[in-house]
Length: 210
Image 1 (cartoon, rainbow, N blue to C red):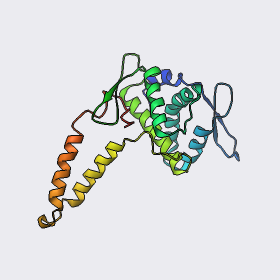
Image 2: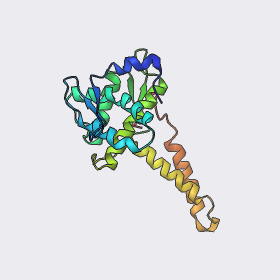
Image 3: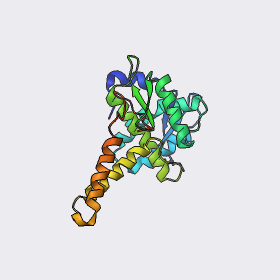
Image 4: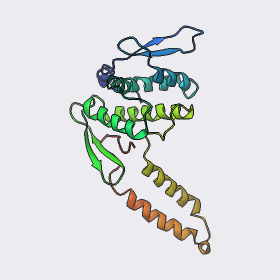
């Protein structure tokens, strides 16, 4: 999920944050600081917590995606750990203001259809990486009891659809007389209706956010 080299430099340059590597024995192996040299606790703690969750390359790649977003939040004095609805609104603003993406309300889901423009500094795969990094950030913070709200990068409608589909698989082998198989057929029809519309834009990712 590493951003293509041709776009990574432009995207990384959007961040006013830098990192300082700790020395052996320090509680934090890396500290994120803003353009004024002040430590930024949230990404620093996320980086520490993420140490034992997958390879370091993924953690470092995610950090590169996160810094421009977190810098944008800090410049606007927005709380990274605000309620999910506030975070989604701020991420939408970042996509429009910094990534130069267009947003169209999605009537089928609780979010927006995002589309790249010629000025968007990330490719489609880069945007998927950014989405994954943001979801991971809030997932790690939630698991550590540092974020008390639902993950703002998850769509509740998409979660409900997955639950419906999981029930379909579970009930598929039930006897006909139990009535469950008929319920599963009705659920499949419901799932088809819910998912009939576009979920995201050409390469966008704010669908509640998705």
